[in-house]
Every structure is written in structure tokens, then in C-alpha cells.
Image 1: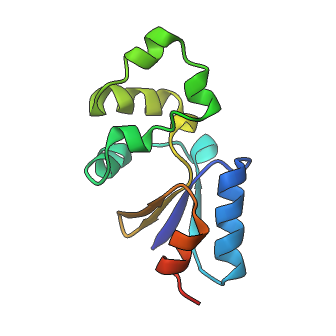
Image 2 (image 1 turned 90 degrees about the horizontal axis):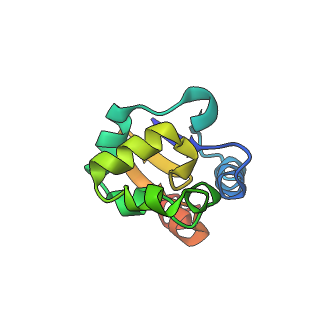
Length: 117
């Protein structure tokens, strides 16, 4: 099963959803705001990618943290704690197929390689 994780009002998520929909790619959408995120899911993802790629340090949520709060995020455990408390800090979208991360973020060229038309 293909699942796109994100927040519906995020422009990057909107672009990814539209790209997939216009190409007839069937996927489920998991809304971090409504459906949440679990430590188990984050643990699975952190086995596939590093915490510093999964945490969106360019986003508003990260930038809204105090310097002390940012300094407290330095490993998988501290990043997981932050992502559970503030799921909007997770890089979006996360495209997952059968538990495997295919893409973090949206890049049309990368999506095209994964889903050639």
C-alpha cells in the first residue's frame, strides 16, 4: 500500500497529492494533524533515514523553537520526542510503500522516476 504522510494545508503536500492524483496513482493520505503519528512509525522511519533528514529544520515549526529547544534535538530519541510533540516539524510529505520510505519531500523529477508514465 502506498501512503502519503503530511498536512493537507502544506503547499508541498498539495503539490505531491496533485501530482499523484493527476497520474492516477492510488494512495492513502495520512494527515498528521488528524491521524497523528506514533513512536513506532517514527522508529521505522528512523531505521531508514537519519533524524536530521526527517526533521524539517527549514520549516516554520522548527524556526519557532527556542535556541535551547533546537539544541535539545541531537539524536533519534530527542528528534522522536519533538516529532511526537510537534508532528508539523516532520519533513513533508513522506511517501511510503509497504513500510519503506520512497521519498521525503516532493521533487517532481524523483517522483517521475518512481512512477514513470
